[in-house]
Image 1 (cartoon, rainbow, N blue to C red):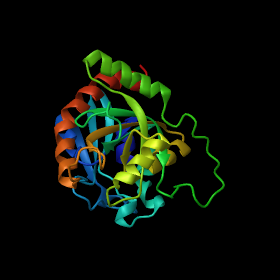
Image 2 (spheres, one colour; image 1 turned 90 degrees about the vertical axis):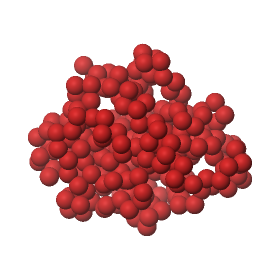
Image 3 (cartoon, helix red, strand yellow; image 1 turned 180 degrees about the vertical axis):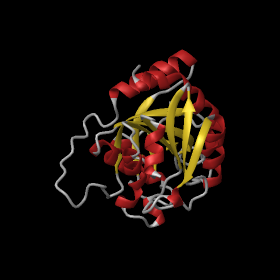
Length: 257
């Protein structure tokens, strides 16, 4: 399976988070490989995470798409959570774009939109590098070059793409209003249950990293509404067209030529 994906020749990979799997329907797909066909790769069990790789094209450029991921809250270890990203690196990519569904703490970053991750707070209590003295510098984890490419693409297409800090928590329960107030004090703009472990692992493997958050809801205590996964999936589906437009506009800058 790895050889087939390497032969496809994509340099950029995209990991799709909750509710974003319909993006595959908007891409030109050459072939797909289920996660179950890759030895040692855990299969997602959460709604909204299909579990397959797509060899696709976007804006005339080749793109490997990982549709879905596994999470710590499903009972997986940090090493399991990042196996998909590690596999993409063996498949020959040099950069990875991570996406996720997130709740907003910032009144300027509203549900229904997207945010470019500029930095993160790892509050999961886990690291994919545990077990070795890998003192990795994370100062520029989220590539300034890729962020600039997405920012330029957003301006060119008239899309609003603010930057902000993503706080990763363990889950699976949503946060309490008190926890959301704490995260705000710590400097978070949005909160979710994924992405940062994959970003750390990808950076450790020498991959260029970008991350985009689909803002699916206001965080606990900001709207008075109950939080539920169905809302997250629904908002993710509704935001896929915007992601496709952004990717199509950004891909030439991302590829750097």
